[in-house]
Image 1 (cartoon, chains in turn red, green):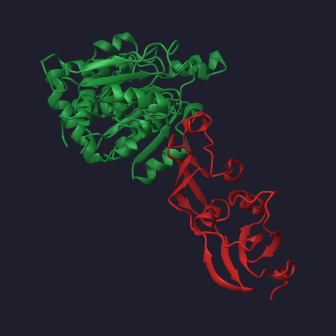
Image 2 (cartoon, chains in turn yellow, cyan; image 1 turned 60 degrees about the vertical axis):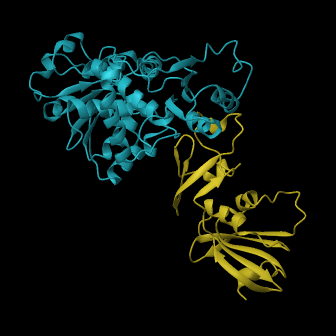
Image 3 (cartoon, one colour; image 1 turned 120 degrees about the horizontal axis):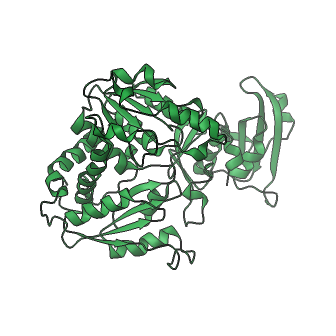
Length: 154
Length: 307
């Protein structure tokens, strides 16, 4: 067991999201819909030294196995993240995140003149043009989005 | 190929599809000039213009009537359901039940695509804010095909390349034909970098300059656009730029014999009226070509044409 993992005790059952780019852990929680009022036991470790990323964050969610569709959205802000499903203290499944080709209702369009930023009965829709580093394109106004994605999470 | 489909952005068109629109437009030209037709008899086209427009609205109306169909118009927005706060989604759902196709111009980008998601009938985008205006691009391509050539074309796009939606769509479409494109603008109005990168990725030869005289004698098409005064905080700067791209008969002394000059109109000072009498002036004909091109599109989406 490495020193990093010892900073927070291992979890018995649940999901560990590793290799989140340093500083993005709270945005990962936002994408997962985990707010301050959650009942789940959540551990957040930020800015741990990482060979691959320089600094990384880790999120552990106990007693909840995150679904693939949920975790794939994490790739928007943490394309290198890995997902570990833990059962009885053991890693039962491990996989990388993979953005879907279309993301619905997660990221607002950055173009203030886009119809998706009005009161019309639609959800934002973003085509994923490049996965790492992420480049999105709004289905409605077709404007590309490649920076500050975390600031536009819905 | 087109029946019941929407016309929203040039990105939705392959080169083959563009060619089929242009071919059909050519065969409809006699009807655009007045030959009687009942191809769309009994059909109704709804014109939803949430922004002012003269030639686009009237050329759609002309195209529909020349094909024997009828037109319904959204009146002034005041007094209508829109002023009561109705969503665009609801408006097109309702109007789509009255008409066989909807033409929409709206100030918000992406509005035509939104309309297409809610409309029970085909939607044609007649300009969505700074976004797309595909029927303008198609009539530009038709003009180039008829009056010059689409293959191995050397074209200069001149003026406001930053905000001008027509030049963005046109540059994209020309890239499908392998054109050599020179972008001529003052540095403050140059074409956005992502669009240039997209053109280069498609293998299009793109040059940029602010000096039109460098290249005016070695091109086939000179595509002028209006530089809007309100883009310049300093009127002196505006005057300087506006003067630098003013086409006069003298300016054209050494151009290629078959150079054509195009302009989406309205023009202000960028083309002197004396140029109108030269064989290079194609902009009024270009404006007329909007009718057969829109006839082709209406015919394709509402019935008669190429399935």
